[in-house]
Image 1 (spheres, rainbow, N blue to C red):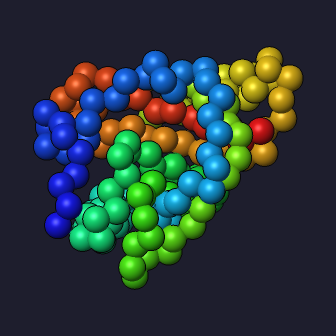
Image 2 (cartoon, helix red, strand yellow):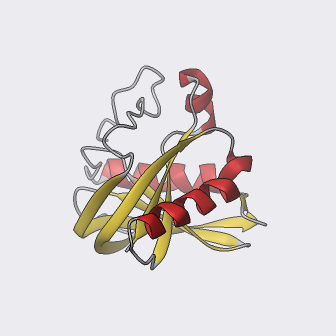
Length: 160
């Protein structure tokens, strides 16, 4: 099984917001494993189980991406699509590719502020005279690691 990311927690690596804050990022046919998380009013119910299942498959395939990137498409009150970046196709998983140009902005704090962050992201895109097509959320660490690091960073990627 392939080793996951180096980190002081043994789980999520420490996130550096600089490369992600107020940037324009281009994904060119970027490969991801896609799965679905069940939710109740956008509150995930089986997120941990979905992540463990997928990371086991990704690790066993030797497909861990050099840098972690997980995008969430909060497309329903009852669930969200999760895209985990991989370095190559993973057997017995839904492999998808994402392309596009994205404006990014980093937010820090409690998830209860997500509505405020969405509004700020919409304003940021408008201030750049761009039109948003879709919004993804990059939750940079799990709750345990966020507590350890003392920061809960979320990157919003707006496809323009």
